[in-house]
Length: 170
Length: 324
Image 1: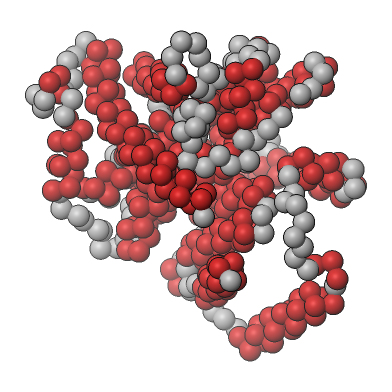
Image 2 (image 1 turned 90 degrees about the horizontal axis):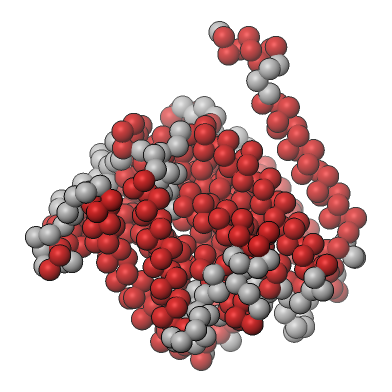
């Protein structure tokens, strides 16, 4: 009973904050509300007895991804008037979101493996083992992707590129 | 429910003690800095000026609370509160002795790192919402610095985790009590990892030589430029709490925590924490501030690769040395 009430509260928080992300007139406020969404998701993980996931969620998403988004917002141009994003065709967005919601609900209802089980909480060891045995291909593919991203960022930012030099001297 | 009760029973005294140590740390820093620079420091309030922090707090509480007209009001008010709360939250998992720990989480190390990463957000919020260019530049620097330095911090904190085979801070201390302190043995990943962790936590706490977010000679007061009274006090306090907890975590991870001969564990833990705490001030009053680009170069070109190597060395040590 307590768990259900707790879940309701946290889930309500997430939904509310997510709505506020979508409604935010100011990009920075949007990012901060997104932080609330991500933090509350970490609480959900704690309630599902997956503390490791919760810690990772806080460290990577709230600590890392949000910071990057903040940097992204701050390093790009935002005029006061431009920042208030115009919402074209809100009904289209609504229909699309409802469609997505329907898809998720049917997927959760029909897939047998997604029901919460009372299994023993996953330890760091279990997660590590399954990452390096069962899911090793996905793991390595992700590493490769991240490496490519990093190299791409470095190449884009190289200072000795001729076109870049021209831009700077202007 | 017993977990909650335990948390309250131990958490409240721990927070009280941490705040008291923070207040005394303020006094200690002034005295210590004064001695380093051949001055006297506070002498008027109480014996040897020991009541100076109290006087400071009373002064700050009396000051007028100003909010700039063009500030983002909600974020401006929220930032110092969150900053203080996140800074204190780290104390929850620090084991001060085998029994004195508010919450002995299985993922203690991860918790400390995660909450540490969170502190950045209110700091940045404060700088941005002030709507002041100096505050904004300070906030930008804080974000860039924190993001960069959390990489070597996380990696060097991984070294004791790998060596002890556990993420629980208590387990790590127990392992060190049975074997060796990680700063001593295995020396190769242990000692450099300790130094790296210490440096990165200095940078995370915005301490000299890493305090460019509030470099007063160029940025007035950085992120706290527009803050007055107790709101400024909260930021200031959070910085000290952060330093205390960082010292405590470093002594747990690398210096054997409560382990030591003759005296009870709590004494050793407090002694180690205070020694690290004092050495932070020693560094602070002896060194100059880095430039922004030097800071980034140091982090990305030296500390990050070094910490990666240390993690590999730790894994190798465990594998060759027979594991846990």
